[in-house]
Amino acid sequence: MDVAPPTDELVPRARRGRPGYDRDQVLGIAVSLFNEKGYDATSVSDLAERLGLTKSALYHHFASKEHVLDLALDDALTSLERVLEHPEAQHGPADARLAHVIRGAVRVLIEKLPSVTLLLRVRGNSPVELSALERRRVFDHRVTEVVRRAQDEGHLRADVDPAVATRLVFGMVNSLTEWYRPGGALDAEQLSTVVLSTALDGLRTPPDPR
Amino acid sequence: MDVAPPTDELVPRARRGRPGYDRDQVLGIAVSLFNEKGYDATSVSDLAERLGLTKSALYHHFASKEHVLDLALDDALTSLERVLEHPEAQHGPADARLAHVIRGAVRVLIEKLPSVTLLLRVRGNSPVELSALERRRVFDHRVTEVVRRAQDEGHLRADVDPAVATRLVFGMVNSLTEWYRPGGALDAEQLSTVVLSTALDGLRTPPDPR
Image (cartoon, each protein chain N blue to C red):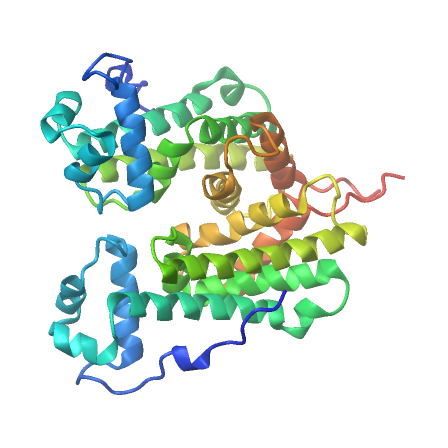
């Protein structure tokens, strides 16, 4: 299934708005506030207050609160979709493709932690949220197809439903938004290695090769 | 570390309040609404409206919105803590104790899906939420000690930090609140088997035993 090409126009460029903040910075602060208070519980007045801006200065940057949400969700989704579009996720044995996807998803979560956190809390309360959920579903579906292929190729156990396997793996990946904090003991590379090896080989001590 | 004994007094009994609902039913409907709209975004008026009760009839059941939250979180946490208190989680080889904990946690998530879902969304915005987060931390810490012991006993790989391993396993378990729906293809027993085998043995095809 095809996914819309990355919508670069929607991703804000560092463009000067009011003195003190550019558009990306306003977006970043807004996403942090949404994650802290909950999107629905955050008013435009709350946003303006957190930014130390008037509401009209805020509307200089964004058409509405939902516009801010749309940009943040699109940023997270586009980054995840790019992982699937990468040649290493498209060609070669499916288990290697899956490994690329898992590592790439961990990297995106760490690099885009606030916007992915926001994405994972979306419940479908508006057209913007429903559209984000639909893009998540397409993403999950495409990963499930890679898992199914890896089972068909004999590299993954066939006794786990590929959709369930995908959800469990992304349960591990997405849990990073709950407990990973930048500057922790493990960097993105180490974390992606731990997640990948846990997903593929489990936590049990490997049998003695002799 | 000890955990307070299950606070049965806080868990509502099926006691008649207003005609049409007992206290457990009111609690159940309230928890569903919190999960749907977000706790902070739900007002007492929203609750009364959903229940078709006046606010004063609602206050007949519960002292406040936070009281409802407290009961629901306590219900989820007490159930999880009981898994850890079970003799099979307390005695014997640590890998078997961990298996009991993982299976038990999956069962609790399925049996108490709405209240565990609410628990997992708590961010610490009030004393009730902070206290629930602290009980979650104690729970995680106790599971981490079981994982560490299983590593010491040689049954789990020692190259994954036990706290990280615990978080990844509970990332899988907790993801059930996002995608498991009652009446789906897998029942609690089958789901706990899939989660356990994925956590311990991973998704890769086992090496040929010959």
